Image (tube, rainbow over all chains, first blue to last red; front, side, top):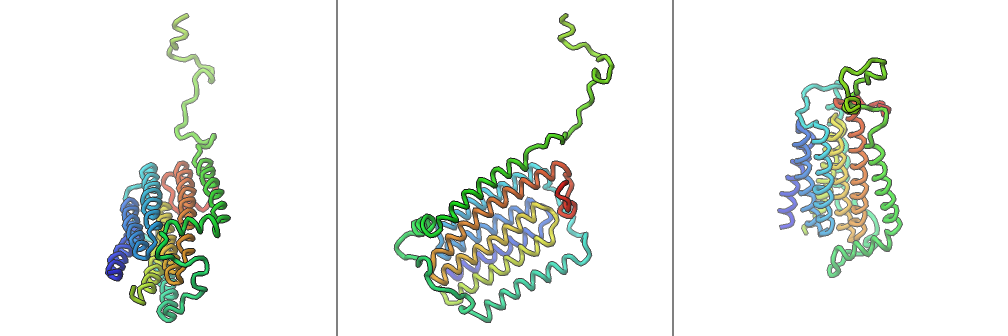
Amino acid sequence: METLVFIVCALIVLAGAIGVVMSRNPVHAALSLVATLFGIAVLFLNLGAQLLAVVQVIVYTGAIVVLILFVLMLLGVDEDEDLDTEPLVGQRIVAVLIGLLLAGAVLAVIIIGKDAAVTGARSATEAISPTVTNIVQIGRQLFTTFVFPLEITAGLLTIAVVGAVVLSRRPKDLQPIPEPESMTELGDDPLTITTEEAAH
Amino acid sequence: MSPNLPLAYLALSAILFAIGGVGLLVRRNPLVMIMCVELMLNAVNLTFVTFGRMLDDIAGQVIVFFVMVVAAAEVVIGLALIVAMARRRPEANADDLRLLRG
């Protein structure tokens, strides 16, 4: 059963990933990303990481992809791209070769090494308990062993929020539509009488 | 769990990471590039959870938690940069953005 779930989800994940890379329309790429993220959430469940599966759905598909789609719509760049022309000659071939090399190297380690490829002490932090629930274990570790990384994470999020506000603030010298110069400043009398002057 | 299934997870992560990397190198739309970075981060997350399962350690899942936080922060900053650049040069792709001064 676990193997069957893995095979189905692996196909979804890979199809979605290829969709992200190959689709011309960025909106289609974002939707393919959703498929991939959902597939990985199910794989997390398959591996017994219930909390991470839920967080994956909430944070990734619920927040990150929605944010990406939001910016996509905001900028209006949701039209098809031209993927046929290659701006740098030979770039795609080199990129695919690098990708194959990368995947091939890791796969070689896994296939040759089998289980010996994964080294390290067993249960160094805390063994996965069959009785204590997943979320209780992760929460306890977060606030004991990993308490300093957790504090640093709080700082990182604060910096990210401040940075996003600073970056997306509209600069003072940038005017999207230049306003026409005032006629009175150029020494000309206005052609129309303003309502205040008409009242006098 | 059949004995070779964790290795299959690792293989899937490796392939997913490579697909994300190729996408990052090939695509020119900054938004699609961010999505490819997300693919790579998810591949690493899957690897962490699999390692945690193979070594019977909860730390694998805790670290994925931190990776997700970093990914969220990275997306926020990346999208803010894209919005700031698109405001100045709406048609710019990753090749045009060599100068961060805009």
